[in-house]
Length: 392
Image (tube, rainbow, N blue to C red):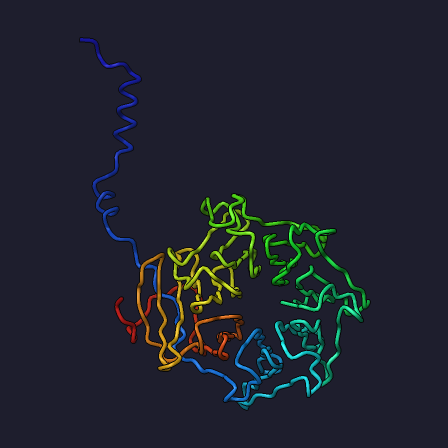
């Protein structure tokens, strides 16, 4: 009998040394450590026409920490909720508001001017108690149907049904972006946001357009599989070309659409859907991101908050308005972790807009405004004490 070949001996030694240690096998059998639970908003208040709102159909909400108030755009006027006095003041066309339907609000942090997007009425600036009106007839606004606005330095960006307009408040110069000078396959601009040196346009049928503010160069995020009905390949890019919002926070881009939502960190894409996360519905009207790890989505079936992207941990808020009851469902992936009785939270499950106000959150719905009071709020996950949570 011949002795084993040296190479066989070396191979056997290598295989033996790479076998798992018995203790390691025992450790592998242990369940993974519980990553903890997210913060849940359990104290809510609702604002409706009974409290002084001009209309219950809320299109826009914007917290104003400088004035300690919240601006609210409705189907029949503008409102301002004073958080100290708990009173609401409103402006309608009879009070000088140029158009009754207010679909967008942003605030110039340097001047305090409140800019309003008007659904069919163009753009308005509310300053020192006076409304200034901009339309297709007296300015460079490309269309009078303004879905969203964003303040970026000296510029006011407007997302309209016929492209995007950019107004320089210092030079009084207007720029228009359409399929002629921007990478838009369609020109229906549904949303716009400006953060951290970038402007993002959510374009109906053209995905997300990103402009670098310094270079003014454009970048496009489309669904690479080219399939309109479904997301054919998981996490291959933007989940769909029909997008409703895009917000950039801490070098992470969050995107909402009518087919789910997604997150892009510059290298990796991650799609979230109602069947594999806590997203209440794939039909998402809008979003607002709080950080690279937390974003809230306004859907047609409730308010969904991705509280920790790394573990796919969500909290969804839904209410039964007829009985003034509500719940928060904590989910990880597609598994219900806890159901928390919050009492009456959001006034209606059809969510349209959302904004953050320090630790608080404001949710605009088709039947009023919800205010989640975030006393003790913490980001991401923590080991949670015993509460009124119920097992699923």
